Length: 309
Image (cartoon, rainbow, N blue to C red; front, side, top):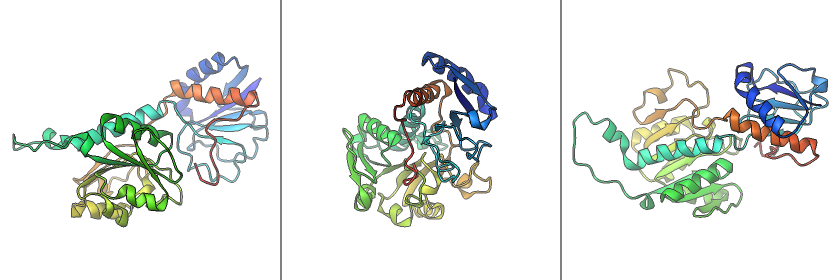
């Protein structure tokens, strides 16, 4: 019998329990799945970092902690967590992120805002460039960033992707390292941020980086709030260096009601909705990792504790 503790929040139990049971049944596992279980008998923890469970010390038999989120920055530094930690890859996250980024990229590329809000009933507009004439840069080429970059290229955009380590992605110009970062930013007209939140990426989009973008560029951040120096972004918006910023993630969430992003005409705030794990598909990812653990196979999507993701 494999004992599985669901510690991803009581409000998520009703959504997750049925598909988890179905996926575990399909995997042919004998299991017990519950929200409450003696720590010493738990084999796996299905987890979300906002869970009440923050001390992993009592879970002496636990083989892995399986995160239901893609982000692990809120748990990766927990000193009591000595078990393997796997992040969520798949589970509807990729599809949701691609749709969000494509939608807002096309919105800015086509100048839709001016057509939607047109109080003067202006008729004559200059046509936008074709996608092939629009330079787009994606910072971060993990599972989400690589798929987003490919889909943007598939629409026809001239896409450059940047990552810390070398990557190869069909149809995408890829750069890496510190020198590659400046080159990736220089002249970009749409910038998409899909990096993890680590000490190395905090404020990666600062005043110096913003100045490298094409004047009037659009910034889309569905990655992590600390990637952006908020004050530098506001200054760049006020100067016209940045034309508009669509922001889905913030240093503090929910975004405080008095934050200047809410009132700035050059900012669109979305409430961290770009990508969410869907229980129906995420359950299959969890079940696969449990099946691998029980078979003595390596877990998928393990977090590199030194890198932080």
